[in-house]
Length: 272
Ligand SMILES: Nc1ncnc2c1ncn2[C@@H]1O[C@H](COP(=O)(O)OP(=O)(O)O)[C@@H](O)[C@H]1O
Ligand SMILES: [Mg+2]
View (tube, rainbow, N blue to C red):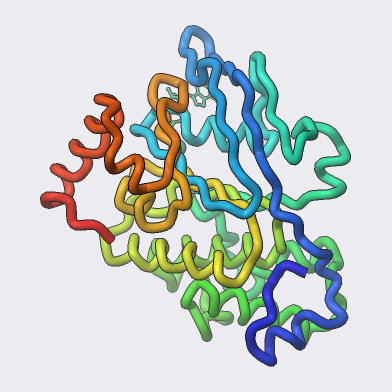
């Protein structure tokens, strides 16, 4: 299974579980086009995401980041172009049989009437992946520890800060044991300290779970902090892709403008 065994607790978690082996997927977008009326949001967009990497798409507000994620998870149909998951069309039923996707929405989308533990375990219960409560509670506490929220099982969402809710939403995604995690604007509306805890949760997730991650954000600091590679979205296209150091050294004027305006706005560019 996908959650790596590092402590004895995790080894116990590994045995007799109904989690299947997870397979980090590769994602390939080929010449995607999408318009809403006269508003062309994606223009011949090409992007390749490698299995097991964390790719961060950065772009201005309104540049089409959420629209892009909705295409990858199959919630939106492109006008033209292809979305391939390990070489198969995203809407091919085989994809859903073989692979599990988890989306962390910008709003966190927790159920306010459920405890943290019940929010995290909802998917496991609905799909009857486990029938014993002790395995479910082990998974809940394990995923909470990955995101740095040990002991919050019985809290209600209303008792948590915005950053904690985001981390519960990430824990819920991890509990699904997905092959692909999509995260929409994890640090929007959070102060820099909170943003850092989210960055840490995403980095820690990588240590424990083998998964492909696509994170979209307008937060260049976060991108530098968590990304294996960064893709820059502008005018409906990916104008540059590279490791954080490569993006930092980019000579593309549009990329430079995006990086520098953001650092100027944020007190001279203190990075996470
Ligand atoms: N369902 C929709 N109907 C019409 N326009 C939409 C819809 N979803 C997004 N858009 C438009 O697409 C553009 C990109 O939106 P979005 O992907 O939400 O931007 P971002 O996430 O980068 O801030 C915006 O101009 C937005 O108004
Ligand atoms: Mg958005």
